[in-house]
Length: 146
Image 1 (spheres, rainbow, N blue to C red):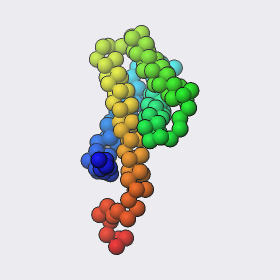
Image 2 (cartoon, one colour):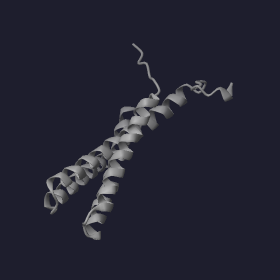
Image 3 (cartoon, helix red, strand yellow):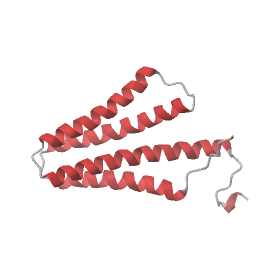
């Protein structure tokens, strides 16, 4: 049985970008409007950036392995370790923060939404590139190439 591979739909691509953007913008807006000291804001900003990078890197490594592209065990382990560290640093930071529980929940949820969105965006980009490589003759509604 041959597996049918489809290009990601525009709706799913848009939803992934929206999830990442909403999560990151909400998180950053919360930091911008917070009464935290600048060093605390820098800590939470750095954790967001580190988390986004580690999530995308892990998704790429998992996908590479599933497609038979070599990924060293050390790099694969570092990707998992980095994501766990980013989540732990966020958890410890929020646990020790002197802010209301609603604020802590806001930061945690927008952080996780950003990570999910980044992974989904990376997956969609990879799926679309693979589909385009497998189907170079496909025309996606662009009549200018006819």
